[in-house]
Image (tube, rainbow, N blue to C red; front, side, top):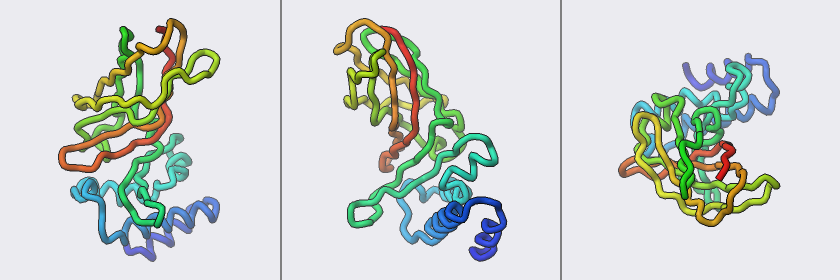
Length: 199
């Protein structure tokens, strides 16, 4: 299917004009990009990113599947130059739970779609941005560096130190994860994951 046929098919789908425009623009951007990030040079990932083209805004996927789908997004410098890639809206694709509590919060992440990009090629995984809030909504820990861990059998365990908080009920709120593979640029994965725990 050539680009014009694809655009005509998109225009046949009932959706707001603004959404159509964004999808078409994103598809043109994906198919005409001359220089792709190393991470997406693997044939399987290139095919997956083209297949995800229609879902780049996530809204169309919500209409058909009942849940928001993740999508790749260019990271741009202040002057508009593309300096990397991120993966957005991954909330429904990764599960987070508290596995244990000692002097550390041991958190387990499970990739729910391990055979799809970007999860199919990640080797290391960690938390990139998080906070722990108390019962009153006050932030008690925020954005401390968390070491990445090896991803095995679609699961990874991450340890968060709790030596600066007192006993009580808290909520872990994670907004950005990070994954990497050997010789590849780390990929920031955005979403919203929350889990309550008692220390």
